[in-house]
Amino acid sequence: MENPESGLRSAVYQTILSRRDVRGQFLPDEVPADVLSRLLIAAHHAPSVGYMQPWSFLVIRETETKQRIKALFDTADAEAAEMFSDKKSDQYRNLKLEGILDAPINLCITCDRNRAGPVVLGRTHMPEMDIYSTVCAVQNLWLAARAEGVGVGWVSIVHEGALKAELGLPGHVIPIAYLCIGYVSEFLEKPELETAGWRKRLALKDLIAFDHWNGEASDARDDELLEQSGLDQKAVMNGSFVGSLADH
Amino acid sequence: MENPESGLRSAVYQTILSRRDVRGQFLPDEVPADVLSRLLIAAHHAPSVGYMQPWSFLVIRETETKQRIKALFDTADAEAAEMFSDKKSDQYRNLKLEGILDAPINLCITCDRNRAGPVVLGRTHMPEMDIYSTVCAVQNLWLAARAEGVGVGWVSIVHEGALKAELGLPGHVIPIAYLCIGYVSEFLEKPELETAGWRKRLALKDLIAFDHWNGEASDARDDELLEQSGLDQKAVMNGSFVGSLADH
Image (tube, rainbow over all chains, first blue to last red):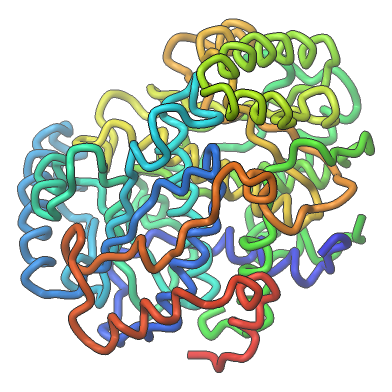
């Protein structure tokens, strides 16, 4: 992989760009143990601060457990709907935001804040780095799943304390991501919130600065970076922005 | 990609498993604008809570800026070394933990906590979800870089307030990751902290539970999952755990 082929590179970009948060397209088909194990291996190979590997994986298949988690979601979801203005609130209530009971597997990825003792290399000044490491594990799993043709949806509309109690997590372990996992009828072309008109994709070039917050482009390289970052979304989605390029 | 080819799947796993935190192997070769733009496009296509897209990207190329950040690292690094016991402290001082001046590009990925207003879908009960979204963007970029043959190292040994001030970040914007980016002489076979004997890779099967914290395997599927998760590390690294399998 020192001189990566464009095929490999293209595969990675295709996976990243076509990954979706899945809520409404789960199939009941069982996810075989070897597939699920590969997803967990991908997660376990995330970067971790001080090689701490603070994550654990709770695989949830029992219907009763899922039903109790679904009830926690329903409570929080009703509270959330009240927080939006009238028009947004109606739109919010019409969105399907989870697939807890539809997905054959639910997975809670947790972070054990004590896993490597009180002093951890790289965490001495940013104590939240163990949490960031765990999120990297979530994203590894999500991309591996997409490459397997498996959908993942992240449920975040739940009271953290209630979720902790339901799953029996000790005080020093926090739930980072509650995921719904399963094969899907389709991966949607765009994020659902974009299609629904909830929010638009921001222009990447507006999110780039140089050397300092709000620092502007100062040379031709910077200008070229901004221009390339404004590539047409279609070229990004179909991978043609990768395939036509020579290798380094 | 509905029925992914094993070649594509294998490419994604190879990328995930051979990704490294790079500190000492950076080359001065310039990273072309088109390559850097693809890395940012990958980051920008991370999942984000409520489609918030809270990230910004500060591209740092000026030597003077890098030198000031390096000085912030040196201060924190010296403080960190004092926190370990004698033997670990000596070992800590011998580790190279950053490539700030060596890497042609430094990149700070930030999170704007106000980007989508006061009420954000999916963030009503877990306000930290915007930060998690930004970490997903970091991991997307890291994997895209690996597929491009570009190394990335995450510098977390720095006082957050000092970094914010140096880069001129407003109060509502927090620095999530300070990354060193560049081509490399090699990608090491194993994480450096593993090779150095700092910590070992944990056995994945010890990190898996069922339905509840410490919940044990209750059927043949669970047993098979644990068995598959204990696959030999070599099979994981060379991808043979993927290549030999039929598609779903």
